[in-house]
Image (tube, rainbow, N blue to C red; front, side, top):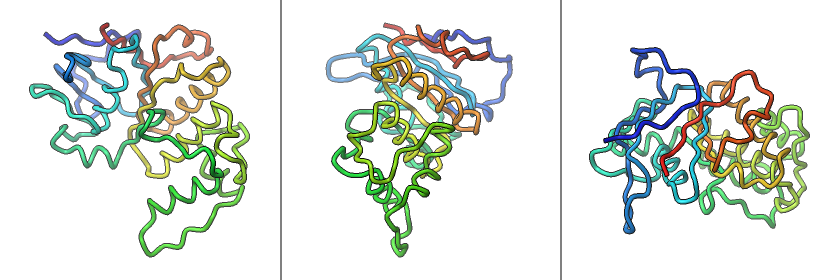
Length: 242
């Protein structure tokens, strides 16, 4: 029997149309060589919403996020639709329209290069082969970072990546992810940021993305600090079974 993830938000209206959901899953589960990684769980995540998945270490949060963006294949018998595309059959389409941030080994940045060089590399990778991609200046970096950094000062083009603090590093990675115009973003291990202010800044960035219509799913060990954000409406909270 599937376990529906526990949510702290009000129940969704009965009969909500599937077209309104960015993620719909039933009996979603994944097994590895050493046994069950996560699940079975059911999910119904509305498009343009901000969501938090919590669970203890080893509960499968990272693997769940990677499944939702088409990077991992769930067990047979799982039913999963993301951005109106069934997975894993249409994984390529989901991958093109989603982004994964904060996942070790997937979106790590070279810490010995500048912000400008990092941005240029990402823009060159996304541009048509015939395009000339110039090294960005401070104005271009600010333009790319504006949606994520808001009123905070964006990094300077000449700064080395390792000189960025934790919040700036993660938010810069979010800004890079937005270059591909994703409809869905998953963000792992927000609570790995060491100080409360860094986590608050990242949460503010994620809320602004959801308000712009992007579906955001973040993962952390607990939801303990959400009540301290001072928001009128908190993210939808789903607790993975341990």
